[in-house]
Image 1: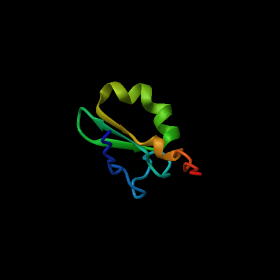
Image 2: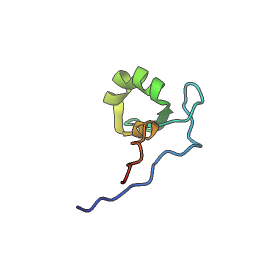
Image 3: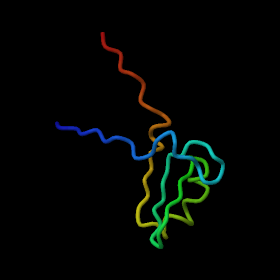
Image 4: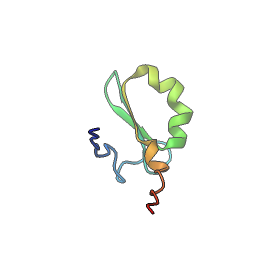
Length: 72
């Protein structure tokens, strides 16, 4: 199996447009422009933003990384 890891698109410098916390979701709008949100504000606005977005980049899986494996 060949797995390729992709570097995150969003960095710690990307901030939520609503509250200023670290952004983990980016909405690229069809009309142009983009919005970035923390996980909380992304969930709160997803229903309205997803239909008008050409791309949604969701990196919220980085918030709860898998625990390290224990090898005997």
